[in-house]
Length: 132
Image (cartoon, rainbow, N blue to C red; front, side):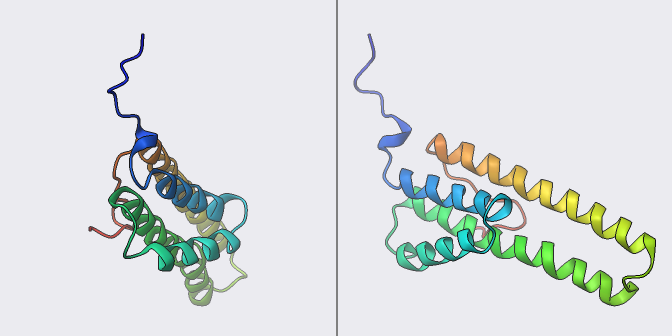
């Protein structure tokens, strides 16, 4: 027999928003980049000030992490190409290795954030997420 007094994570205010924000972050990295970010962008400015604490926390984290992901995955390779050129094989080896490591790390953080959202817990992305 289940105890009816136990609070399920899905009963936590902001649970759905937290889950949706984390899913959009992963969709932005994996399936529909840009489109998922625009949806996340709209959610962020719609619920920025009046979201429940769990939803607001995950929304701020995913929005900040998405901006950092864009900079890390697009700007850094462009700078490397601008400095070294497109011709050298070592440039391609370095850029592809960088992209794989950086992209995989961002996906790992997104999966960890999704697990925390599913558990109904707050989560702060290390380095790329805001501290508050």
